[in-house]
Amino acid sequence: NAGVTQTPKFQVLKTGQSMTLQCAQDMNHEYMSWYRQDPGMGLRLIHYSVGAGITDQGEVPNGYNVSRSTTEDFPLRLLSAAPSQTSVYFCASRNGQGVNSGANVLTFGAGSRLTVL
Amino acid sequence: SQQGEEDPQALSIQEGENATMNCSYKTSINNLQWYRQNSGRGLVHLILIRSNEREKHSGRLRVTLDTSKKSSSLLITASRAADTASYFCATVPPGSSNTGKLIFGQGTTLQVKP
Image 1 (cartoon, rainbow over the protein chains, first blue to last red):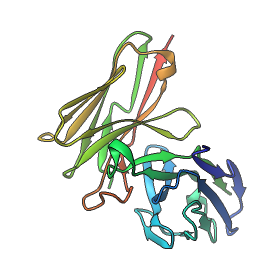
Image 2 (cartoon, one colour):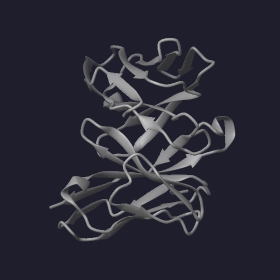
Image 3 (cartoon, one colour):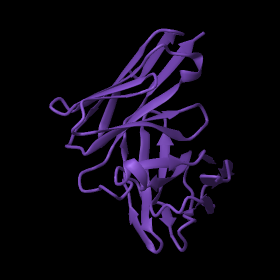
Image 4 (cartoon, rainbow over the protein chains, first blue to last red):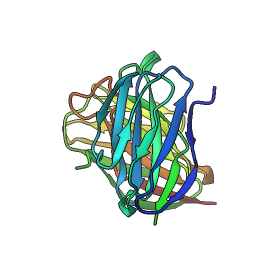
């Protein structure tokens, strides 16, 4: 059981370039999400999905695109990278089983550190 | 705006001492969670306390919740160097139960000196 796997771990982009951050989970979790973490800001929700084919915007969605074609995968796309998108990005999935069912307990990936020059 | 605000922002203690960090939030909640983040790693869920609970224990962790003051505290007893990490509180925004959405505080960075 690998949990939540994010790739790449590190990436450097030039302004205007595009890229996709990959996220995969093998726990059959319905819910997946992307957060960004900036110094002094905690984590802020970018986009989330409550199941395959369903996505919605979080707190800071501008400049990012997502899709959810399978339960396992939830890629985050930057169509035209900007320096303001320099951040650490975390993918998470929700454990909806057991004693904490319905309580939004999240399992996080290890993060992807993105630098936009 | 952020739901949770934490203090202190940074805390440095000696091994064996207790560490207390606090979280305040703005709206009504169903539950409040605490997460730990080791440097360069993802967040790991530590403990959840529901709105009808006032105190909860898990090993060396003790969490309290005061819904009248909209605040929670996390106490780590007999701290160890391995407890060095950032700690975040998180709440579910109103109307978002069963969505997985969480709002995080800014975190408390704990350093435990050996």
